[in-house]
Image (cartoon, rainbow, N blue to C red):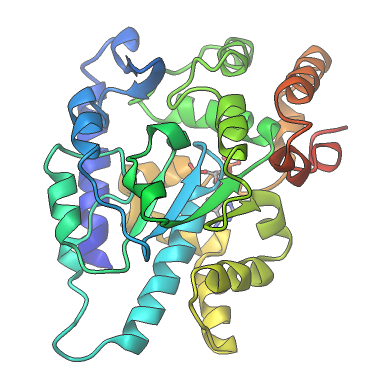
Length: 312
Ligand code: A3P
């Protein structure tokens, strides 16, 4: 685990150093109409990504930024490690040094060639819209866990993250931030597009949607369901240990080792309803309206339980 995290920490550290020499306007670039952070993504890497060959047994997590992707990524990595240990024979040991930065669209142009050589099962995270993923993901029926979180907490988390991490644009005021969030001028684009585009796949047999809030309410059950979806069997003891290792407290405590400088910014509150500290009445109404227009009538919209989590 240590070795594989080193790549993660190094990449983030480099991005922070590079961002410190850049102007605010240079921090994001547009590709096919969506903004991405210049220090960690590039058009060349997006083009190279088309050669990525997904496998049926890949373990993919798709989530809009700030939906808890690092949390669920930890759960998935742990589940795969447990199942690999069970199935592992001596010659076929897991080579942790080979592991890549977990987000599919982040890295260098050679990443996909290296990934094509990795042994199964690969844990792959992404913030991309379904249409921007390599075609092989759908063609080869890789299983995708689709993580969604209520839009008000996502915006709140994104605001604090933007002001903590130098490689994406910071904001002088919450007002300025929420204006950009509502029109989708964000790294990885619009929250509303993410949910409505992924909603088109919600009935695919290889896709399982899950919400941040349901996982927060009953993490043991959430982990159990995730493991079952990916066909990973767990003893009660293993289930407990995955749940404990992925608790907010434990991930926060380990964050310097696992996430380097990003750790203290990323593991912020890990709760539900912190949006109440930022949204004013007008902003609440604007969000209610946008939710109603873009998401409310969809299956994913219903799953988000907006009335429970986003109303005062
Ligand atoms: P907050 O900013 O609301 O605290 P992502 O990983 O997609 O960037 O999402 C980050 C959000 O997930 C942050 O939300 C972070 O605190 C939360 N998070 C990270 N690990 C968590 C955990 N183990 N349990 C609950 N929330 C967690």
